[in-house]
Amino acid sequence: MKCGPQANSFPILSSVWTALLCLTILWLTVLTHTAEAAAGQGGDEALFMQLQSGQRIATEKNYTPAAKPTVYLTFDDGPSKLTPKVLDILREEDVRATFFVLGEQVQERPAIAKRIVEDGHALGNHTYNHVYRELYSDFRAFWEQVRKTENIVLETTGVRPRFIRAPGGTFGNFDAFYFYYLGEAGYEIYDWTIDSGDARRPGMTADQIVRTVEKGPFGNEVIVLLHDGSGHDETIKALPRVIRLFKEKGYAFAPLTPEVKPVQFSGGKLKWPRTASRESFANLLAAAREQRELWSAEGVPTRGNAATKPPVSPTAITYTETGHREVPDRLNVQLGDRTLAFTKEQFRFRDGSYEVPLRRLIAAIGGTVNWNAERRTAVVRYGAITAEYDLARQELRVWRPAAGWAAEAKARIYPFPAMELVNGMLYVPLGQTLELLGDRMLPGAIAPERGTVEVQAAVYGGYRTGWMHI
Image (tube, rainbow, N blue to C red; front, side, top):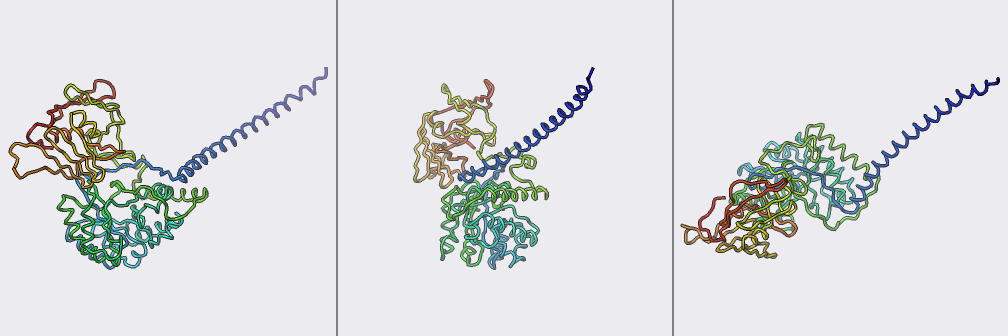
């Protein structure tokens, strides 16, 4: 029987199948790596397109608000020959501030930069030379100036500044790419809430600077823009009066820290034409993430990184970019025989207090609210009580009958009330607002069903005399 050739075919077939199997495994491996690379590139591509469309991308960040009204005085463009005078005034007034310095000025006056740190003030990065045309024609130029100034300040003072202030502010100068790169790199970008006007036009006098600051707005946390660069002698003259103004209003003074929530202007039409390529995007993003690693290597917590977020005390408010915390699904407020019901999207919970829209609350207890858009005030009328929420001045003024009240007294003024205008609705603390209007919250809260909290209040129609302590 001739079986030789048939028998020899088995080893051949086995070798063929083995080769095919190896080729299949190799092909699948290549395909998998190709798919993973494509997915990563697709993610970066989507990110690039989103930023190119002008949409800012925010990373979740935790900040701790000031426990009491606080003002952060900030000085730009130094150090100059005027800076020691500023430091002398701050020392005399026992005030700490923040100096956004230029790299070229630190190189010229290193001893003054060292004194800023020695006196307990914070240092911020204001780029190297403040030349708009260079800084805002391409992010690479801005990035190079930031890093250059950072290294100069570090070598001079031993401090690596985390804070950045854009020369001229971010409005019209920054786009979504600028914000994203710097955020990814671990920097905090600060604009301001009050512009003193000392650099708005030539010839501003000390009186004009003080009058400008007096206009506010005055919130619980205020960042004031001032300048200590050459030519700002009038700022030096105005500074003691500016400090006195805030002291009389009950403000504490502090330097900026990474725990202070940054103020950033909303986007505007760019003043500087520029383009972004996918190649430059990839390179700059890599550089930004490398910088974040540098902070981590130095043991400095960076925002948006769960592994390095600092612990938050139980009494602190934990903010995200949307400003919300974990809250119940529903809040029911029992007002006598009426129930005011809120879904999760209609109320907020901050620092142990429920915040609700003022108009809905007042309507439920039988009052009215009139909004004056020009003055930015909401006037509540509830029985014999009138309350005026003034967003521009950050005050709450309440008129109500009170036993034993002095005849000349007209109203009680509460500075920095807890209120916030969001999407056209003014949110106020539920319990505190009822107390101010002569009503009161009843102790305790019950949860009749999962995800729902129910609170009760006693309402008196706005005719209860006597002041409640809040």
